[in-house]
Length: 127
Image 1 (tube, rainbow, N blue to C red):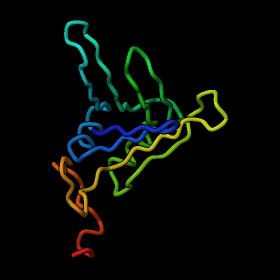
Image 2: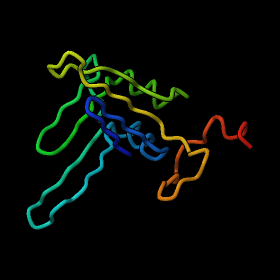
Image 3: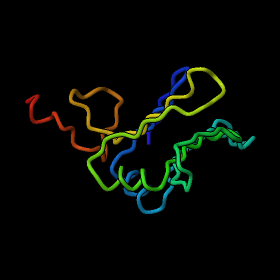
């Protein structure tokens, strides 16, 4: 799972294995250790939830995005590419959340890992 952030948005991109794991267990997560001695970590996770709307939170260095169970099932069991929502965060704009299936790049880029990505729907048209 990849994380991309801007000043008011969070974007999670899941490869095929991540989507399978999320469908089976309801959780997929990643973490980055900054300092082993101090147990200093940053993490992010996607969870299936019993709530009616998509929510997000940040606690103890972990970003959690919670997706309603029905919407999570629809996304994992179909060709649906993304789940989008604006979460309330106390600002007038809110926090934009985008959860996507990660497609292979049409143009290879140095440093990008296309391992286990979804086949890009436009791949055949570009060749």
